[in-house]
Image (cartoon, rainbow, N blue to C red; front, side, top):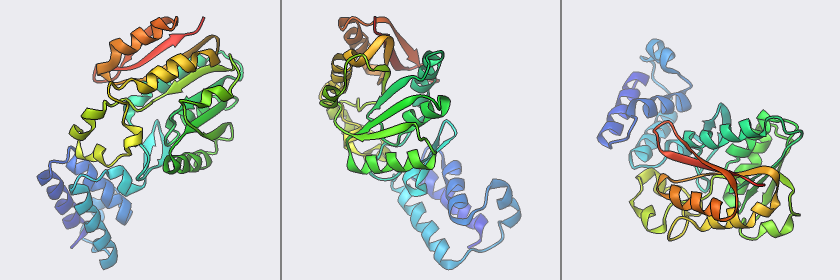
Length: 282
């Protein structure tokens, strides 16, 4: 088949499989396997690729049609213009997390050589974005999963973030290893899906690591630990910021206030859904 025929087949297969963005996904795979972008496809569409590469492409189309994440097929994804390696065993970075990151960047502004810790770091998207915004910051990125920790280290290296230290550890216990009032900010995009809900999520999400999704029966297990146990590690006038599921807003705001945070507020994402909560330590 020609490149144009392969593109049309992928697009058609994705539509039939009810993939949300069939044209976009088809074009991503064309560019990934054949090195041809949308503009070049117009000119080179009548060309036929090598048989072995065509076979790899068609296998990827079939895999994507089954609900396997596009990002895992590509092996990388971009977050806030930052290229990140991704694959099985690590949560795929999502644009929603920009809400958490951009607010943290704004709040850290003016702090000299800030010390920041990113809990449940995954690919390192949050930590790397902060490190690029503040090259003189000292940033710790904590991840428990072996597979995710491997991606974290590779992404730190890929983005030349020498001011990030990756730590393999459990957020439920690691706080004991740090002295009080050591951080200007604690940030986290923790697992927050209620256990019973996970099986109802989209096919793509089912391929992502359960460890990065499961927030316990009520979705609150990580928030309880982060807000209660890590508060003492934050300097006066420092803050904790967490990404949230919109169904947990009231519980998380209440948790912040019960732990005597001040200036507690909620930020919404582009869809108008509650997406992050911040609170200040006084």
